[in-house]
Image 1 (cartoon, rainbow over the protein chains, first blue to last red):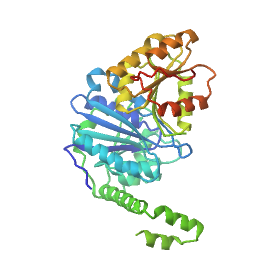
Image 2: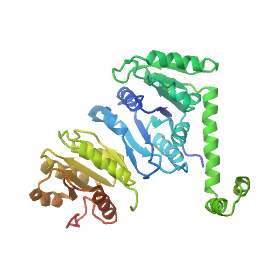
Image 3: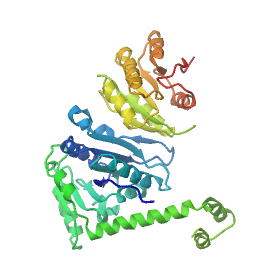
Length: 255
Length: 145
């Protein structure tokens, strides 16, 4: 059941929409390639209405236009597809296969806004949460429940006003725990603060609380898979709607 | 709709008109497909590399500034050279009627000019997906014949 792993690291880079994750990943890739062989799995949400997806992360990776670096990088755009949770485990398989085939680092980039995306991040060894100058509505990552997963917090767009406030807000939020991750300020646009990132990432240590938060997500994912993989799942769903089967009874039958 | 497809929408060459490509990309998404938009000023090699990395079934090429006669066949040739013979190529933009048969001959299976409806493009995707009409196929079929 456990996929085969090679040496190497799987990291997730996640955060609210619009904070500059893709540009940050691009800046990081410029500094990793060609010494490191890196894969990026760029996850974007599937439209619940149409089942389709516009996979727009790849367009930000200017590093792919640099011929001296492009052959050290593999980028794959992935849609979250159905809500059954199949995609996170597929990404885990993909990451394992990549590591077992010469890749030293796999970066999973997701928007940390939905359960599917958060689970994609949770399969990684380390999680980096990216924030940006607030738009007047507080720390989005906190609201999305992402902070507990973070091994490192990056505040992007340090070239804009408001970045320092985000750093302060995050520091205050995290000060109640005694196991809080480091917070750094960067600008993916100007490159400020990016040079330190490769070394930081490879040296990142897991914290007890983030490990626990990751395991929580993995356990919930495994449990959900157990329920939905039961061959009677659809039939029981029908009975809930049509025969008034209670949720408690349904759960009992599925376990 | 048929099966969900992975489709690249690409802007080869120096043409900066991207509104049409973006409209088509969204329409394909709304039609249930997974669309990767390459952005502007892509070389044929970059487009083929994207199709390879992303395991795309379709590549849509947009050109409004007249370079289609050179760029579209170049993309088709590079796809074949890379062994991506099952990839289905279609094009759109400003392409004069009397230049279309040469493009079809080079492997472009459909050409959608101004006024094309989203539903027509989606129908093409659905029908082409069920045929053996990749860029390496000998089948001379193209949309609209």
